Structure formats: C-alpha cells, structure tokens
Image 1 (tube, helix red, strand yellow):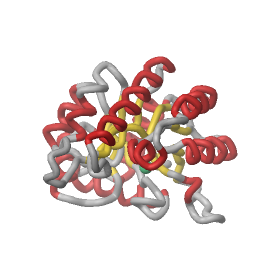
Image 2: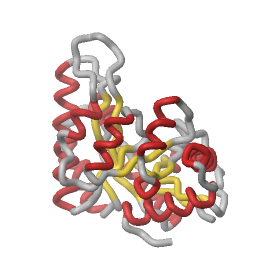
Image 3: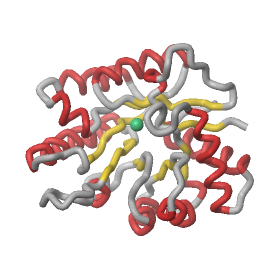
Image 4: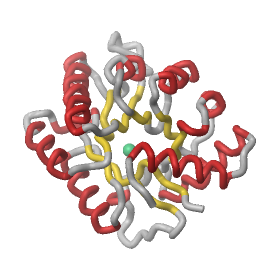
Length: 242
Ligand SMILES: [Zn+2]
C-alpha cells in the first residue's frame, strides 16, 4: 500500500527528514523561490512536481517579475500549475484582490497553453470589510472547461458538488470538522485525493495516514481502499505512474 501525498512543500521540511517508503510525494511550489526549490527536490527524488504563483505571493512580492517567473515555470515542464488561486483572507484592499485575480487568470491561461491541470488554493474572507468574500465562487467562475484540483478544500458541501459536476477533484488534509465530513460524504471516492500540505498544515507528509483514515471512517471503507483509490486518482490527475 502506497499513500500519495498530493500536496507537500517537501523542500521546506527540516534538514535530514526522510520520507517513509510507503509515502510518495507530489512536490508543490507557491512562489518563484519555492518553485526553484520544488524542481530541485523533485528531480533529486524523481517525484512529480507542481509550479505556480500563489495569491499570497502576489501580495507579498508584487508582480513586476511575473513574466520571468512564468518563463521558469514553462521551461521546467511541471505536472500541473499550482498552487494558484484566490485568497480573500489575505487581501486587505480591492487593489490586492484585483492583483490576485490578474495573476490567477495568467496561471489559468498558462495551464491552458501547456495543457496542464490546475492545483487551486482558495480561502474565503471571514471579515466584514466590504471586500469580496467567496473565493471558491470566483474561482469556479474562472476554471470552466479545465482539469482542476481544489487543494486543502475549505468550501461548502454544495460547492463541492459543483466542483464534482465540473469534473474537478478535491484534496483533503487530515483535519476534521463537521463541514469536511459532509464534503467527504458527498464527493465520490474517484474524485478524492489526500494531502499533508506539510510542513504548514500537517507537520510531515505522514499526516496523510490520518487523512486516509478519516475518509475511510466517513465513507465506511478500509483505509487500504482509500489509499489505493486516492493514489489512482493522483496518478490520473498529475499524469504519472508508480
Ligand atoms: Zn500548500
């Protein structure tokens, strides 16, 4: 049994961390600096990798060098474009919201041009500050006709059903909540992936064990069945074989 961690920032793990033999990573970047590290780490291990400019990066680093960053992504030939998307919790001004949208649109067109799927980061705005609130909604409006994966999914059950209806995939971390339980229930097993988002959400890729166990528990399956199905889904989505 192999568990595929569909989303780890493996290059940010403590030096000397060694993956257990039954966990296989998809290495993901979020900025030009982390994209470079992701390529290096993934090539050293022979792992699939995902490159993109995330919305938080757009706010922190601006977009003056976007053309150069896109060129690096194009030349590196990743398995998918990500993590990219909209983060309305981070954006503090309308200008920042617009900046996030511009960069996301650029990432969507890059994915289209390279015929690659998208790994999407989305976070809603919990504040009443007059800025847009529903990032998932705006994202779904921009990815029609694309292959895409909602990473560390945080939307509603109803939105999850729309993601599935649009042909999308949903990746679950190990964390438990009422809403996540509903999402796991409603999304068919052939559209679910598991992830650690380590070292930021799960401390290490090994937290996918818990994510698989949670899905198994909610769906009344064996953990091994969930491991196999999510591994098949990951290989199909990212286009690689083990
Ligand atoms: Zn991440």
